[in-house]
View 1 (cartoon, rainbow, N blue to C red):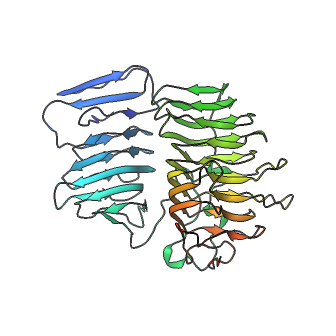
View 2 (view 1 turned 135 degrees about the horizontal axis):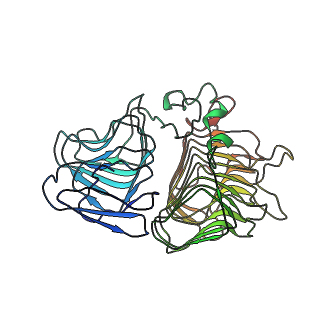
View 3 (view 1 turned 30 degrees about the vertical axis):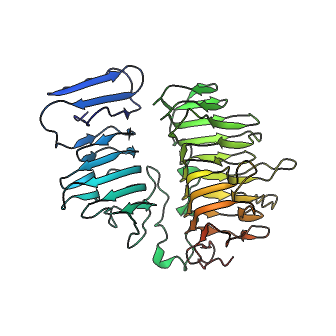
Length: 434
């Protein structure tokens, strides 16, 4: 491990376990046994040296960093940081590094020549950059996804919106661009499918029963879970696993004590019984394959669904099946997913790809629905008439025609922004007119 250091206590979560051997000069090092956290504080010269993160799957969160950060490993997440520094760049991703995610983070450049995030190959979600020469850099060879972020206090809109290709799995083709949103249809291979979601091919799984996760920062991987998962701690990671849960409630449940749950490369089979696959707040799903459930995930505060496939819902008496439904809350992202309530075998459209609003809460704020494939539903995007909406943005999505009534209900309702130019038919690439 490179001498990865930070100012103050920096929890760096890694899936690796066992003895940790580090040779350090002038550095104070502490390992909290059994937690998966590495807490490092600098005590000596070299305070301007970059913090180098060279362990895959590291999550760095909740700290102020007064030096540049250099990403030298795949699947690194920076979350809820303040990075205040000078130098060439505040955050640099080395060439060839994949799947860097930067979320809910503030970057402050102390010098005029300092860039923000360079050179590309990252996803930035709700990132605030101030005082930097170039806030967000990207290129055709190293594209970036920049969502709901700001530069010097103003919303940041790249000259061209380029979606980073999800990794490590290949979705096949180039994404649609803002310039040609209306035009030739985007191939289905662009969206998630069996080969790009769920447990990676070749993964060896260990048998497990139900899990009750209470240890902050715990990393769970490579399990065949016959049962359900409850999460009661912060910063838990569940990856490369299969969940087969016959509960009438949820396959994964987060409690109030849980935050920043990450679920990636996981398959969820709800055995035809789950009322919803995941509930309800403070989680991220990446490359998750969800099927055989009555409803897909519930979306409440601080939830993100990306690069996932939700399909083959189960009709039961009086069900109103949705691949996704909000239950009220703030800061929700639904991006680059394949949402298929429609069941070809029975020609049943079910209820919605995304139902916005619910009987449990009528308020939804800061919801981004972007670059998804959606096919089915009474209305593909359902909007309740009692919804209290603020900053709901629906853009860049592709829609199939297997709905019962239409693509969106109440597109002109207060608080909803429906982008008429970029929400298009899958088969023609032409704009959907609500």
